[in-house]
Length: 292
Ligand SMILES: NC(=O)c1ccc[n+]([C@@H]2O[C@H](COP(=O)([O-])OP(=O)(O)OC[C@H]3O[C@@H](n4cnc5c(N)ncnc54)[C@H](OP(=O)(O)O)[C@@H]3O)[C@@H](O)[C@H]2O)c1
Image: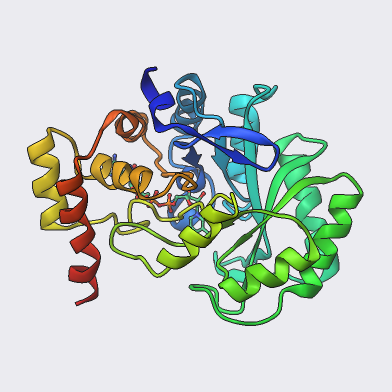
């Protein structure tokens, strides 16, 4: 086994995907708004990801808006048979780039059709409903009404599977009463670990947990422990951060984002980085240091 195959695989919906995937948010312009500075570079990143074996790409039509999905289509359509594209809905972008909840039934239907058109698909593999009771972090509140609309779109054949994002365990339980929930996408990384118990509960039920901001997001992770460990192992801090996630639980599917082919290659090589147990223990301390 070589390359990203070493990250292993996990079932997402009715397909098996490699545990190292790719998140496309960095392919839009600054602030995830407008076109990228270098469109050819964005196309190259996507093509390189798929050539390296990535078969799970995370996106949204509100990246750009629309632009990231159009770039994915231009780079990759007709899509490889094994590629699973996961999108998310529940927001639209203001003229100033702001993120505005878009939860009315008509807005949800429109979002699904926008994703289908911009990605050039007849059916969306997985649609994550992103809860918006608080835009920045999971906050309690019912998502029954919008999820019922998504379940109807699923019955119509426009969506194959439904997932949830930015949610609490209570909201996941509510969602599972309405439809089959095939994945959960919340913020989680070496330094931000609110979902420890949730990850284990989902693993128990065979549901993938997809950490967003796996490298820290807009402000990539910085920690002296991470840097020291990376130096000792002859790896980069970002590779160590990804390898730690791969080791954390078998149901973690990674979608690190980058606009650079060099960073993509570096990130995918994390599949081949084995972390000894004492290093894991050392890295586990990073979260408490970050919280202090
Ligand atoms: N559900 C949600 O609410 C939600 C929210 C945010 C994101 N997401 C999804 O999660 C995916 C991942 O999140 P993300 O892209 O925001 O954050 P991320 O993967 O944690 O980090 C991306 C940042 O790290 C940099 N980076 C990547 N690889 C690097 C490397 N090897 N060395 C140094 N810097 C590196 C990128 O810059 P360069 O471009 O220069 O490499 C970018 O600034 C997104 O693409 C998106 O699909 C979902």
